[in-house]
Amino acid sequence: MSKTILVYAETRDGKLRQVALETLGAARLIAGDGDSIRILVAGSNITEAVSALKPYGGEIIYTVEHDDLEHYNPDAYMAAIEAVLGVAKPDAVLFGHTAIGRDLAPLVAASMDAGQISDVTAIENNSGEAVFTRPLYAGKAFEKRVFVNGPWVVTVRPNNIPAAEAVEGVDTSIEDVAFPAPSLRSVIKDVVRKTTGKIDLSEAKIVVSGGRGVKSAEGFKPLEELAELLGGAVGASRGACDAGYCDYALQIGQTGKVVTPEIYIACGISGAIQHLAGMSQSRVIIAINKDPEAPIFKVADYGIVGDLFDIVPLLTQEFRKVLVS
Image 1 (cartoon, rainbow, N blue to C red):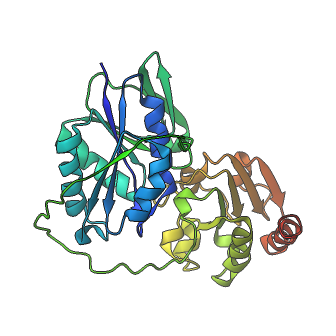
Image 2 (image 1 turned 60 degrees about the vertical axis):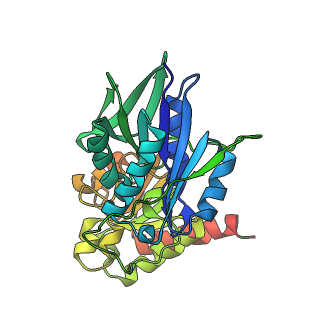
Image 3 (image 1 turned 30 degrees about the horizontal axis):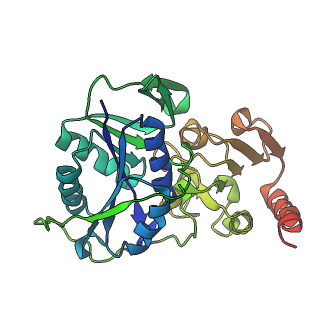
């Protein structure tokens, strides 16, 4: 029996986020012959995001556009999603496992009386049955789960599922859905961001992180220079955040963000279990630490024993020779 899969394409400031294409890629892994993949875009000034999505296929792109959706508000966004659910009547809804996706997914699951599997890192299609893999115990173990009946709600961890590729000759229709404008318990007038990084930490392919070993806020400058050269983002351990060296928005770990970049460079980070919970699934881990017995070396693919203030500038210098002509 064919099913309808609805993909929530997350945007930020009117632009499509990379995780939206990864969520669409997950939908393609799940979909079988005859299944319909549809996409939902909600927000304010979403024309650019919708145009960016069209080449990637999907039978229908549902759009909900309203000024109340300029900034994320769970009441407003749930009203938009429920309006689309009434039109699309999906059998499965997919979100990115982002701050917004983690907030909306259980609300949608409750609304649909659906089962939910969160933080999926791999999907197999076993003779038409989707098998979802997700980490347990801070990445020390993995479990595989399936839905025994529908409907479904799934969240996909960024940087794990291959992004969907563009489809030639695709004929995607756009369907505008009216925003029901609910009574909001709160209204967000403006958002002040403390960080000005060009790349979202949770989606970055390369992350350069600092721990207490950076010694001060100034100690993050060599890391920022390296990250900018590599087109990556800067992160931090909780120890560095607690010491006031950087904002908590950069925190990676059990009580911070979970990242899975292709390359993770840990500078002056000892490797406490709480930090490992947030980055141990990175493709390649490079550790720089003066202490050869630091626990971070046990999970690192490559380790450099030395002072980060000597090593990081040397790495930046060598990378610049290769990358900048």
